[in-house]
Amino acid sequence: MPVIIFAACALASAGLAVRFAVRGPRRLYAVFKPLTMVLVVAAALAAETPVPAAYKTFILAGLVCSLAGDIALLAPEKGFAAGLLCFLAAHVFYILAFRPAPGHPTSMGVLLPFIILGLLMFRTLTPSLGRLKLPVLVYTAAITIMAWLAAGRYVEYGGARPLLAFAGAVLLLLSDSALAYNRFVKKIPAAQVIILGMYFPAQLLIALSV
Image (cartoon, rainbow, N blue to C red; front, side, top):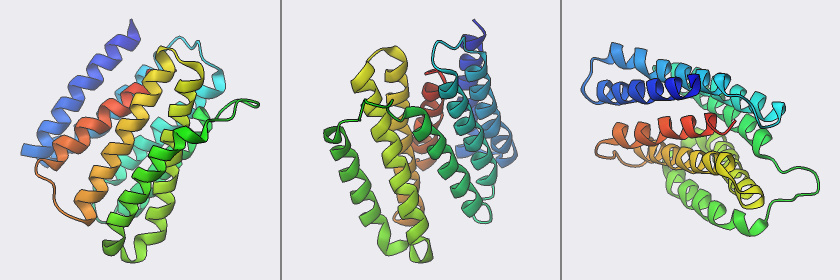
């Protein structure tokens, strides 16, 4: 029951964060964006863990790093590098959570669509990246691997929790792709609605996979 309550509160807070991101005031967006992730972390903490303890630990670490990234990105220019590092760390923790067990290699066939999407996105971004080309390449590789491993885990094991993690990973990949396109290539109409509308559910789905 606490998980359901925290998840419902996170969704309500996410809706308010999106509303204030679009219409202001900015100070309320700065409250509800991190608050949403605090509630997502609380939902993961409250779960009665049927998954391995290490999985829950890595997911929680990823969620906390994402919260730190959200706070850093409240200053979009000054905090961009710090935010990128925080989210890169989050993806590394998610990779550690989703990595296959010994003797259960993830199918390389599952990787192909993620490689294609990652390469297309990086190629699209490259002309506008300048000195950020290498950091963005590393970040793109990390989030692509993260989504691939989540997909492979679902293919290997099936079940509700791996499906939640897979859906969350894909939404997170799409949200970050939209954010990068909006920042470096061309402004997207209703960008905040699209980006945050995928980002918050993505993190909540990953949290509920523990």
